[in-house]
Length: 294
Image 1 (spheres, helix red, strand yellow):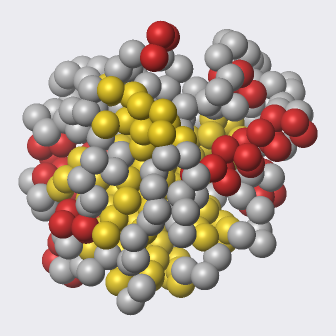
Image 2: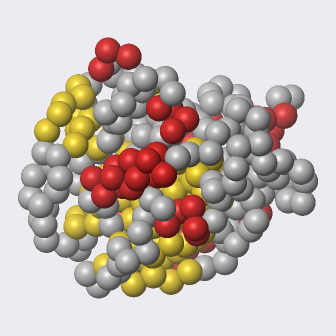
């Protein structure tokens, strides 16, 4: 399969180039927060006042970028239902699997047709404010089977407001994120006991690296490989620089740690540069890695 050209992030440089021909038995994983992807009109009570409904042209542009990813699995966040997701990921090419909740910002997955998918119960405990006016998000939990290999995947969108430093009280956001980290650690421990390959993907709202407090909580349950650790996110960076630390992450566990293709991290940087495009597209860019399946 030929991979379409898009922006390649490797080491400290952002290089425009092609990903080259895919090798056999590969799986491309991407995470993408599409920022209030909804069909609700501007001014709807479920939306913040500054959120504007996207136009048909905006949805078409997002769909063009989704096709350029040439991904097999996309962990998506801030999705207001299957109808909105289908505007970006056409159902004839993608299966859509969102959390079973009514929130406007739901995590989930778009999975390329042809891959076998098993849906699991939502990780509902991640919504530690369940039932509140401003509840949090559950985790979307699926297993994907490709080329005879099985990979358990969790798509998450964690509490904002605690991007680095201490976890826990007295800061409310950091206290909530610490609670969510403990819940994630429990999910990771269960996957480690099962002995399979797994990954946690999505918007962690946290600048994780190998020594971060949240990373230490998660890796106490199982060894993890962070695909974005030590890398800079070039999304919306000025002057083509290295960018800021990622808050979107792909954490690989179990056998999947050994499947990661070295230097396969890619970030699709939008061609648009005007500030208004952040709201028409997203303030997050899609980022992903390639796994070599056994």
